[in-house]
Length: 208
Image (cartoon, rainbow, N blue to C red; front, side):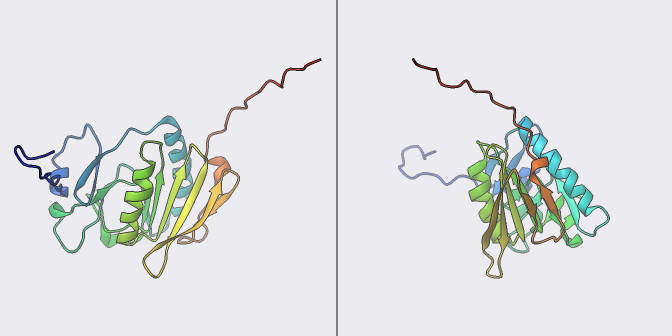
C-alpha cells in the first residue's frame, strides 16, 4: 500500500499480542515479529497425523514434569522483558512440550517450548520451514520436528550450543523417530502416516 501522492511505501502495521487478543475467534492467527498470518483449517490427513502423534506424546509425558500441549495453544515469544500486550510474536505449533513451569500460565506459554512439532501442508510449508523455524531457533527451542504428510517424511532439528539448528536426520514412513531432547520418546512412523491405498496399474500393451 502506498501513500496517496507519494512513491514511498508504508510499512505494514506491527501488531502486538494486545491487538491479537482483540481479534475475532472466527479465524486463527499467528504473529511473526509484528506481521499477522492467517492460519488455514487443517486437512483430514493433517488431523489424522496429529492424532497419531498426540497419542504417542500423551503416553510418554503422562506422569512426567514436562507438559505436552497441542494447538490451539498460544506461545508468546518476547524479545526481552516487555509486557505481554507488547509482545510481537505469537505462534501456535501443532504440538509442543514445555518443561519450565514458570513459562506456563492461563494464556498459554511465555517463552520457548523445549520441543515443537509442525505438521506441514502445501500452503503452509514455507511458513513453517522458513519463518517459524527461524523464530524457534532465535528463541531457543531445543528440538524442532517438521512432519510432512504429503511426502511421508519427518525432519528433526536439534539446537546446538551455538544457538543454531542442525538437522539430525530425515525419517521416512518405515523409520522410528527418536528424540534427542527426550531420550525414550520414540515415534514409529509406520503408525503415524495413514495407510496408502494400493494402486493397480495395467501392464503395457502386447504387440505381435
